[in-house]
Length: 201
Image (cartoon, rainbow, N blue to C red):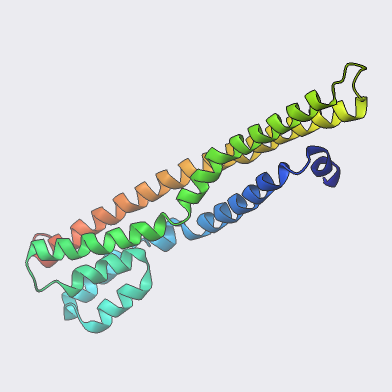
C-alpha cells in the first residue's frame, strides 16, 4: 500500500483524507439511521394507551422526549395537546424539522466528498501529465521520470473514483433512508393529532 502512495505522489494525500472522512461518516450514519432506533415499532400504541389512561402527564412527555426521535415528535405534540389542532400541528412540525436536521447530519459533507474526489483525482492526473511533459527533452526523456509521471496520473484518477463512487452510493442511500423515516414519523404524528382531538379511537 505504501508503495502505491509513493508512486501516486503528494496529490494522493487529499484523496486519502477524503476517504477516511467518508468511511467515518458512512459508519456513523449506518449506526445512527437504524429504523428501530428512529421510529420504534409499537411506540405509538404504548403512548396512546398511557395517554388514554392518565392523559398527557409530565412523566409521559419526558419519557417520550428521551425515548427516540419519534418520541421527541410525540412529546412536542403532547405538550400542546390542550391547544387547538393547528397549534399542536405547528409544535409537531417544529420538532420534526429539528429531528430531520439531526437525521441529515454529515450528509452534506458526504455529498461534497463524492463530488470533490473525482476532481482531486483529476488534479493528480494533471500534475502527473505536467511531470511527463517536464521529463521530455530533445535528447530523450528519462524512463524513470516518465514512469513516475504516468503513475501519478493513473493512481490519482483511480483513487479519486474509488472514493467518489461508494460515497455517492451511500449519500443517495442515506438521503432515501432519511426521507422514508421522516415520512413514517409524519404518519405517526398525524395519528397522534387525530387521537388527541378525538378523531381516532
